[in-house]
Image (cartoon, rainbow, N blue to C red; front, side, top):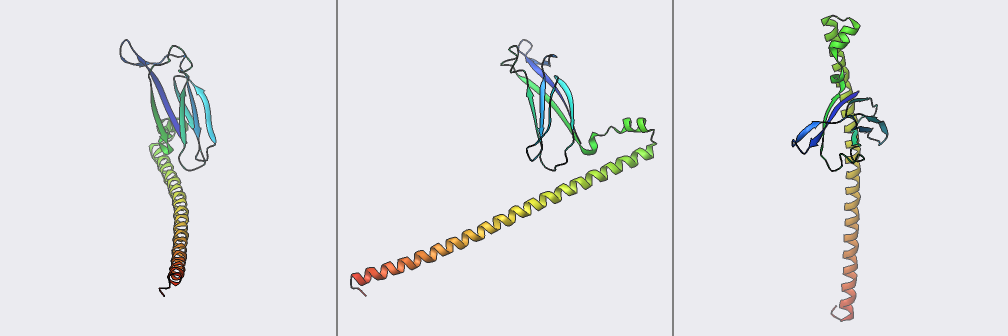
Length: 177
């Protein structure tokens, strides 16, 4: 699970500083998984929170698009976006969970440890996936290098044979041999 919090600020030319943005300013958040499939595509306000869960390991693209380019008032201005992303067990608000489920301190700590173990397992699975992809890439590269060197050797041998025949016919034609 990934939670993203953001807020925007507009540049004010008069005070020459960034000020909190107006309510009319909006952000379009789009999240794509490593396969390029859209996981989340939604319009939010000038401040917001988005949440998504992806079952595909790898790098995800998070794109924030402002609607300020469509608004003539903000055209040509500067926009600052503060973005805070929380991933994995860091997304859980444990004091809120303890209050909701009426957990003791020991039970809450046990839940935190279980979440951390689950996150470690996910990270290990992701590292195994990356290692497998890297191994496949390495083997493919190794195979290509092998065939390239074999092709170069064959071309070199054929060029040598051609040169020897050509030189032999040249010397026979000049009656040097």
